[in-house]
Length: 99
Image 1 (cartoon, rainbow, N blue to C red):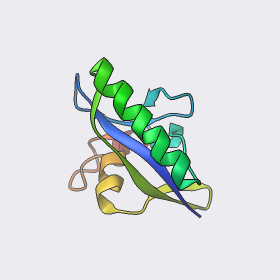
Image 2: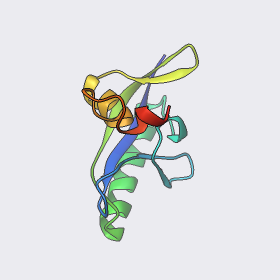
Image 3: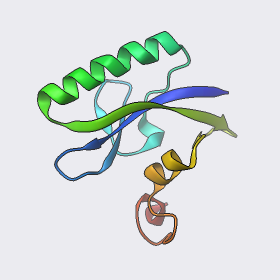
């Protein structure tokens, strides 16, 4: 099943963040809000961008596709996989090192 999630980069340290179900930002894709409805996703994206810009919290905020496979969240594109886990050349760094 394909759904959408919202991501961006936190301004103070550049960390990849995801919009959570309570409209707060989280550092893990597992904690991100998922959207099945495209219109709801777009409306939430617009609200999240406006609030993040107003509060100077995050930049480069956008929607991306996520597949749910065997109960796990998997970004469709490699860019978001790397953003969710960390560098692809060194698995001892980034969020993947803690997994």
